[in-house]
Image 1 (tube, rainbow over the protein chains, first blue to last red):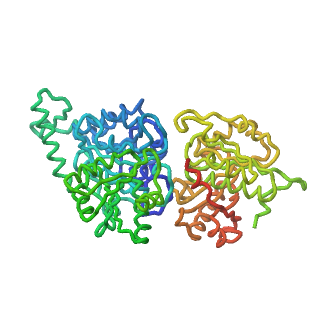
Image 2 (image 1 turned 60 degrees about the vertical axis):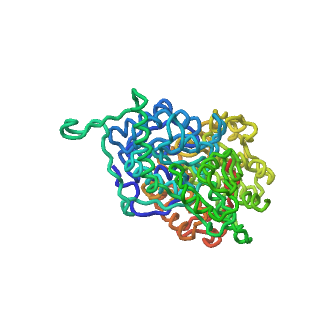
Length: 360
Length: 233
């Protein structure tokens, strides 16, 4: 058996899907469950190539429903387990993901967004934003990191395992087809050598000793009899989610102090909007940028601060207002108008954003 | 400018250049294939470039077809609008690709990635008996899977028939001469143990100029232009 997958730090050149795989290996993920779908496939391809070398497991299931449920099973057995999917697969996976929410299962899911609705394109979009954050028949008690490139994918995939096991909410890496397929350099590293300690996993079922005698019994439920019973469970979960939110939220604000216009974008689109801000600043425009890194929980307070002096907010996204909806909810009691530049299923360049801002 | 020794003659007779580029995903197969085809074309040779990537809906030669054909290169690939459900539905093999190796002039083949990609060469009629077919594995040591001598050896041995290696080590926009030279050392080390030649080190123009005609291991340098960023879809 080979030693650690990554020793020390190394500058490497790879696609986003490979970055996810290397991060999962470096984070000590024990097993991946999955079903093929573009543009997620190479996560599985690379994982299945590397897993035997490092004594990790893989199970290809018959569909995404099974991939999600078997992933839950892996976690119940105490495995640092993950899955990945895209598009129609993300839809199918909502049932196990809802179960994970209800039972507080720390599973990690990588979503590689493609065009929608339905099969649509295998290429790219940000149309799975709402589905990833709020899919299922619950309240969206999920932790969602929206990444913007290879370094992010590597860093946040490692982080996702720790956050999931620390807080026990299903955790997501929200990537997209562009990030999956594009190639750029990044630094890969062994988390331990950077002082990142992986949170220990433990079996959620089948622990040692007699329940109620040697240890507290653990009763994982996703079924309740009475309305009041369920109400209490959801309210407790809500309270816990709100309690941890300030510890979890992440964002990046750029040049917002004196900004008259604040651009808001997440994921890969933020690369274009940040680029646009740099160009526009050089041309004398007072433009700032706000990127929520966690979409769930959403960094609402930080956003309010970032737009405090703004006369306008422009949300830029490759979907028809899925992010804008979240932004508007956070800014509801402010008077600043929120408008959008929406390109569902299509990439957005810095030049386009510059054009949008200057054209107004 | 061009390395004459890269084109062979037998008994004074010009031998067609027939090369398939195989290797890792995002390892540089397509970029090297396109550049090789164009450099042969510049020497006045007749060249057909074959897109044998049946796997990958992204970053294939398809989006470059029209641009490349304006140079006089013949590119055998589907046009995007001739296809439906790329990456989702099956990808039929074009008849002109299936029979491409029957052509008498230079043929450059861009195969799909990995072991399965290398196997697709078998779909071409006459591939196993072709007298001139060279199978070149494109290696970038900045990719961990092919980052060391041992890993390269294991990887190349998994690909089936390979007749030579190409050192295509780079770090995208962060590439330096030192990065490429380190690649030359590691790839040459692996090639020696495999008993294979390093056919070339390839590098983008400005790095290539600084490398000179040969890298630090004496391998010929091919200067390449980047076409694939335009081929995302």
